[in-house]
Image 1 (cartoon, rainbow, N blue to C red):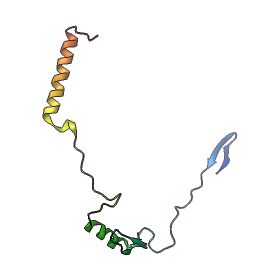
Image 2: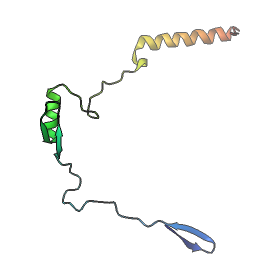
Image 3: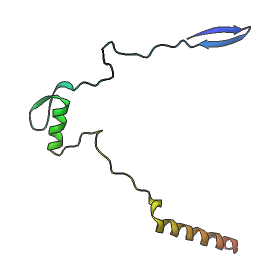
Image 4: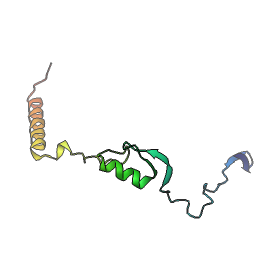
Length: 103
């Protein structure tokens, strides 16, 4: 980056755009299935990610980063909880309006 003078005593930073780094391969956005030989818990070495993951799933293992998390449930989604909260707020407001002040 360099400074350039666009008017007398008015300077700007020259932001030359650089192209995004891309691979010279014909398909740079494709992830290969090949991997270095890796041992699974069954003692065999695998060079294919697909086979490696299939054996792990068959043995009941969870690959970190690909596990399916249970959807979170909202605590405020239950109508009885919402009704109880509204009733508690209504009671608190009525007590305050009646002059009750906690010490």
